[in-house]
Amino acid sequence: MMQGTQPPAAPSPADPGFKLPEESASPQDTLPKTAPDTAARPVEVVPGTEGMPPATDTSTRDLAIGGAVFLILLVVYFFVRNAFVHHLVVRRVAPSSAGTAGWLLFIGLGFLSAAAVLAIINASRYLTFGVTGPLVIVGVVALVAALFTGRR
Image 1 (tube, one colour):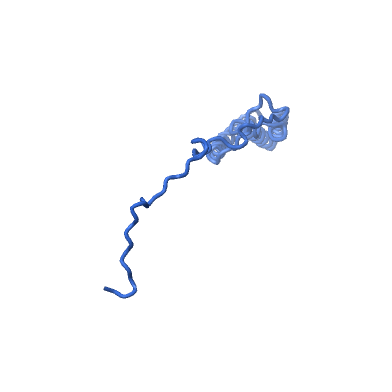
Image 2 (image 1 turned 90 degrees about the vertical axis):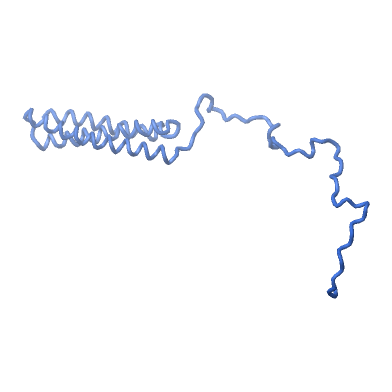
């Protein structure tokens, strides 16, 4: 036998090796909580937000799809611009005026499309006067200027 080691002591017959949990006042105390502490408090409603959809965060996927749609629209509008310039030149409008009218048409359609795409991506976030208003105003002014410039 090795020196300094003792054989393990045999468990006593009264000690089973584990202990049962002590009894609590009610069995519900041992269950995990499923409701937060604030569940019993009244709900607070912010005035002026009734009927408005909740502000949601725009995912990166939605922004990427909207950006791709906007770029496709810009490519289409570039071909529309070229067709419009060609149409004006055939109607005997000066090429410089026709070119200016074509670019104004492109800018107007681009700004209106930007407002529409942003409104479709997340209406609760982007369909506000501060975002959509300037885009629509610049777009409409550019379209009206394109029509007046193309009449010369």
